[in-house]
Length: 63
Image (cartoon, rainbow, N blue to C red; front, side, top):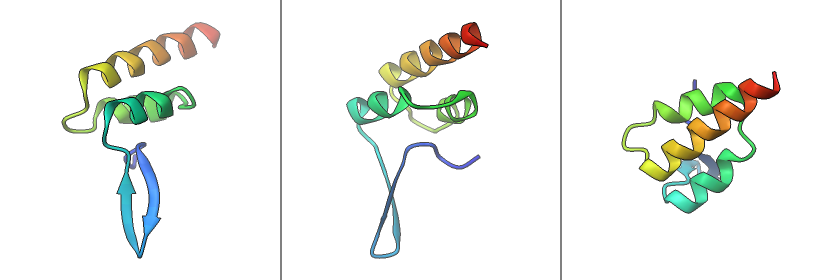
């Protein structure tokens, strides 16, 4: 899967959310596959990992 932290493009170049607060905010709207892909992003921050794991638990509980 593609990096779920994509932020769009600018002059033909792909941009990504790279700081923790922006990524945590984005996680709130992720589905299960995006959360799992987010955990595979190299160098993902600990706070983002916690947000992703929390979101995964919430999604699984709702299923």
